[in-house]
Image (cartoon, rainbow, N blue to C red; front, side, top):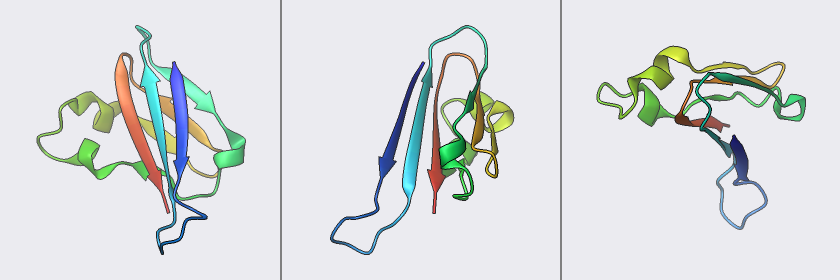
Length: 84
């Protein structure tokens, strides 16, 4: 599994927020506990929620507990979460 956080904070522009990319190559779902990311209003990227998303499993199976920084991603998926 590969996890990468990309932050928009600290740049010259008005953008703020972050993107969390989780690549899960495992044959089973995986849970990540990243408490330092808690409380940032994480949610699935809107592309995953679109009616014609490439992998509909992500909208159905991916979960986030924002208060604890706990993320769940489906097996063999590339899941993207966004935060304010």
